[in-house]
Image 1 (cartoon, helix red, strand yellow):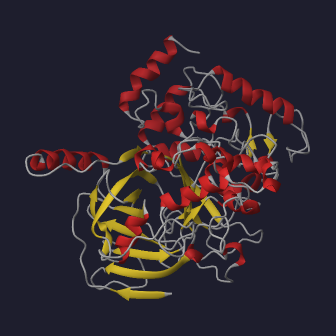
Image 2 (cartoon, rainbow, N blue to C red; image 1 turned 180 degrees about the vertical axis):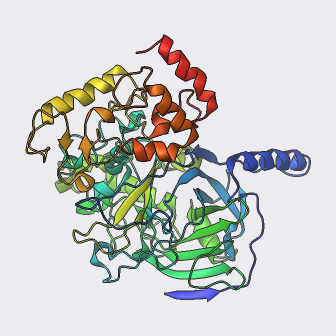
Image 3 (cartoon, rainbow, N blue to C red; image 1 turned 45 degrees about the vertical axis):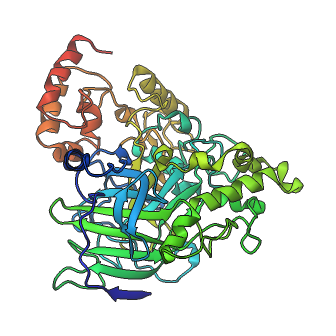
Length: 533
């Protein structure tokens, strides 16, 4: 790995990386007013907001006790993502200095995290390296995958292997099923979904992604330190720093590699993993870390990365010369329209066949792409079972206690939970306590196997896992006994969580759906006594 120190302080640009949403919008309005008379206003990106403070520990090791210290190891908490066309001022110098522009030859994806977040160190991923050093670049690394559905079609694209590491495989760990139509019937409710069969429900393999961004340390091969903290450690990403990380971090969906479904590039049939540069930038004023990817939409953009007079290469489906989103999608379209007859009968071929009739240029507007992702941190030590990830946040967020994916909390969800308990209580396939009459399921290897109904992720599924609005004492009823618990949840949510089996106070007590639990929810709490379920 090469580490360079470059004494170049980044320009402040229209991207406003690192600012929170309210400040960013105010600046954008002000800039628009100032510039309207002298130049066109740059198109703004699509914006996806995620609640701040919703990061939780979701271990994946056998016993659910792998080492982590949340006092010293920050849990990655995504609060915003934005994506749109981008026009770097001088891409051959620094592709991250520029403006959002719908006509740009690049797209930009920004992910904002609370606090200082470090690049991911190696995890001995796929046995590529014997090194396990997740904290190589600092104590707060981020790991995970962000998926881009570029044609807004959940039936084209996905992941045939390692589905448990993707959004559809991890979302239920956060206490509910995703509610968007594109996820219906596809999210894993427990680990039995990962059966290696494409034909069995749920269709966890069929996420619709065309590309994903991988936060995996082994894929980092080069680091440029653009701005170093005065007196800091050049090997650690610290407050106020900006790093650019080069490597193979952006991949076309691996499902397209199956049986060489995509094959224009004969040297690498199906594989499209271009070298990219990802940026980490920490804003000490807002205490936010923005992780960004700028990548060519077209080969014109790829040529511009080399120089302004560089000839543009034709699309050839190869990621090792000029490469772009358009080239990768052209390859999919060609391959879908000209399939190997031996592949057409395979059930997996459905992941690509839809591209045969699509028009690639219709899918080069990044603001129309659909985003999903799961992020987390790593264990302090190597786990005996090989588990690597502790998930902490997902986008889009499922609603805790929503077991049917309708984005509502209703008696139907309670019925589903209680029916499941009645069915599985005492069943040795699910319940380790062997007692079929205690109304509690001791879920076998709960962190590795997980269960949708275990909303507090304590390894036990019981009546307290139901989420009834206003039910703060976890008995599936709203009554006067909930008042003291509601007050505690408002005044000290951490103590409430610690004294109520890890129950999420926000899920039960945010009664005006504003993403906060505070005095504004008191009126809603009082109303529930008048109009209960």
